[in-house]
Image 1 (cartoon, rainbow, N blue to C red):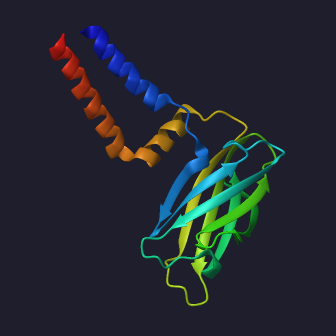
Image 2 (image 1 turned 30 degrees about the vertical axis):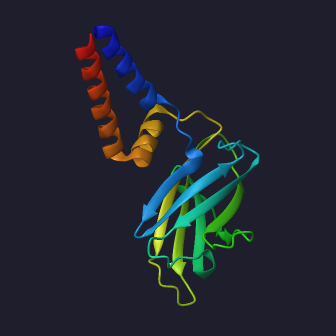
Image 3 (image 1 turned 45 degrees about the horizontal axis):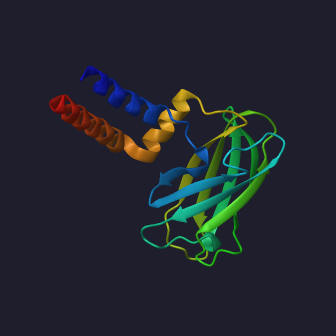
Length: 175
């Protein structure tokens, strides 16, 4: 009986401690959200070109990359190290994908900010999205926990705990 509880607890810990894939980080501001996919292989390598593909979502369906004055800023230790324009992915017919390439100079933690202002009469709300990017390293425990909270939300984690307790109780009664 006690052994089954330990198995459930270990399962929950494995889920919480599983390394996060930062290549699919989601950020939201106002009604605009975006998922960033980072290549190569979901883990930028210092000194090599990394491409970031941003997939925007707007529940009001008012956003398009073509109607956005979108700027991308890369920060290291809270200092801007690069600012440029975010361009539309020309193969994207839905107009909600944009991509950007950058060579991170060294291993470490960076932040990629995407700020968008409507242009040409567009009606979406201005936004600023922030994406943590870890270059050449395995994510830290704190970064993994932050990712899990952002991805699953506190409700998802709470739900996982409740499900774990239900399973634990089931095995406890069966024993």
